[in-house]
Image (cartoon, rainbow, N blue to C red; front, side, top):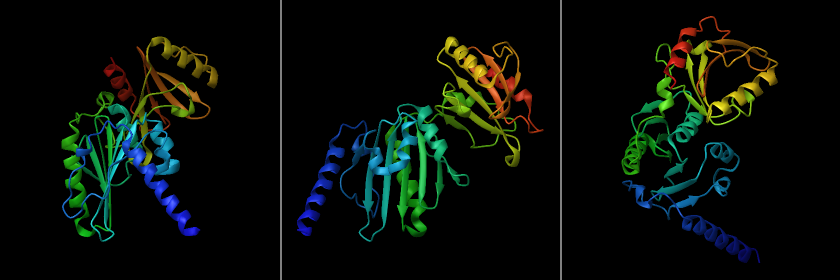
Length: 290
């Protein structure tokens, strides 16, 4: 009886995987390259928003925040229990792909010129390019692990045929005193407020006592004014933030902020208590906004 039950669940698992694989995919399966010494193990498996949790359980929510559309994974196996996985995530635009990449980027890693940007740590290589976020991992690869993953990542990047330029908003931040590779994109609930969405941030100053510049882009001026009015009400702020210039705000939950408004953008500095904050950077950032 136990044997029959085991066979039933095995067949059920195969059926489920086949169903995922058969689901419509925006990825050409030929995008997964051949890897010398590692033949492909089975077919490419496709996961949709409603099934991603089956692959990564609790971590799926983070991906959904960045408009996750689908993920395709190919497993490679050298028949000695050494494996390579390639996962390609479609997040629908470059801002979202950068955003999920920025959330999972290791604090310390090696950066590589693959796609728009890649980071490598032993056994793991992630990069983003256009609307796609690509993750490669290898287990028990030994000294050749970096070489194997790098070659495979370059092959995927070439086949994606997506632009390798970063989101335009990242180019608005001043270069002076900026900490490299600390930019982020946050889709919602910035500073804990539901109306602050679509936010790019960059870190400045000393890494030990850094502060952040940020840009919030509203769909239009009316939406921006609605967000500002809601924010003023939540923190009990009386002054007119919509006026030109910089406005220092004492946020009861976040501490001091400096905010400037232009068009349908809010630009600001978070953690301005830092004595080394350069307010001229906010002026420059505001002037860069359309």
